[in-house]
Structure formats: C-alpha cells, structure tokens
Length: 291
Picture 1 (cartoon, helix red, strand yellow):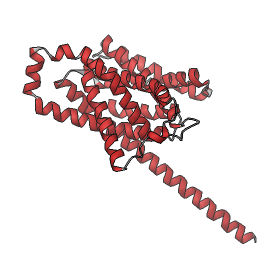
Picture 2 (tube, rainbow, N blue to C red):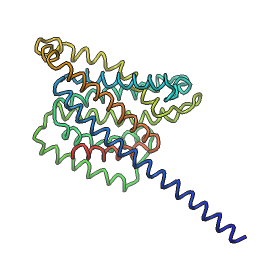
Picture 3 (cartoon, rainbow, N blue to C red):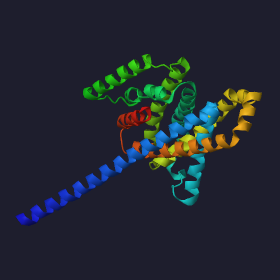
Picture 4 (spheres, rainbow, N blue to C red):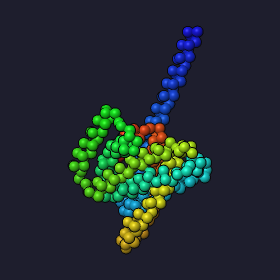
C-alpha cells in the first residue's frame, strides 16, 4: 500500500511538473513572439510615417487591418464569432476600452512622427505605474509594497532619460505620455471584458481585440479626416503621395499586419496575467525596442 501511494504521488508530481514546464515554455514563446512582432512593427511604422506623415490616417489603416483580419478569422472559423459572448449592455462596456484604444493608437503615431522611436518608448516604460494607479482607482486593488517600490526606479529612469534626450519635443513627449495612459486604461477595461457579463459567457481575447478595434476605428476615422485631411490635400502632399505610392502602400500594409500580430499575441497573454504583470512584460518589450 505504501509503495502504491508513493508511486501515485510521484506520478502526480511528474504530471504537475510536466504541465508546469510546458506552460512555462508556451508563455516564454508567447513573450518572445510578442517582442519580435512589436520590434518589426516599430521599425516599419517609423518608416511609414517618414514617407507618409499623417499619423491619424496611419492609425486608421492599422485598425482597419485588425478588423479585416478578424472578419477573415470569423468567416473561416479560425476565430469563434463574438456575437454569443456580447450580452446586454456590451457596447457600453466596450466603449471605454475603444475610446482608450483610439486615442492611444493615434497619439502613439503622433509621438513617432514627432520624435524618435526610442524616446517614445522611454516615456512608455511608465505604463506599469499608470496601470497600477488605474487598477487602484477602478477596483481598489492595492499593490504590495515590494511591487510599489519596484516602480520607483522606472519613474526615475524615465525622468533621467527624458532630461538628456536630444530629440525631445513637447508634442512628442505629451503624445507619448497620453498614449501610455490611454493604453493602460485599455488594458484594464479589456481585461474586464474578457471576464464576461452575467448574461453572457466570457469573450475570447481575440474577439475583445477585434470588437475593441472596430469601435475604435469608428472614432479614429473622423479624427483622421479632421486633422490629416487638410494637409493631405496640399499640393506637396499629393506630389509626395504620387511619387512614393507603391512604397507607401507596402509600408502601410506591413505596418497594419504587424500591428495586428503583436496586439493579438499581447491580448492572449493579457488573458493569462493580471494587468500589472502584463504591463511589466510590456516594459521588457520596450527595452528590446529601445535597444
């Protein structure tokens, strides 16, 4: 009997250890894929804004790409249709995440167009701070003191790096900071959507991403028409567009696809982590980009 019990214990321990190892490998691969896709996006996005400096229109292209990729997934069955997961009042619950997404993505493009990619991401490393503050204000969740103390070096590092940044502009700084706060809010609201509502089952991460992007697209199009429209009608802009049409189309297409890829991975990871841990993982991604 003792031998059987010992054997059972060892078997259970082995299964748990195997599951733990597999889960760790999957999580590691997820983070590596997320970082890689994001680095590719940042490179291509900066190139696109260099030849097509219309930040809000670039944001429209990226969000539209997310919607089209999601619709393709629904049509082929690769992604389960989201309709049964909505429930009553879904659009109202989606609204805050979509507004944060629209503003965050547009302001990120403004920051990239106004300053360097590295400087933008230096400012964006403050995201865990805003995520922790937002979680406290919305849910009352308080971080343990050791975690709070780890956020202080982040703030000091950003302050020192910003002070010595040669490409500093107030527009770039404020746009980067605004997008960081907005994306922190989007992460919190999106996490709540994944938990579902009393009259509906939880929505998958990819569907939260898709519906969030669809509504955000509706907010971003008027901004692009208002802010980019007059500039794009200028003779110099039209001449530049005509001269670089194929390059612009190529860069915008790759920017949109890489935007979908890295955010899809990020949402899958968000479903498995708490919002602050996800933001800290996001911090690691920015170190790769800055490097």
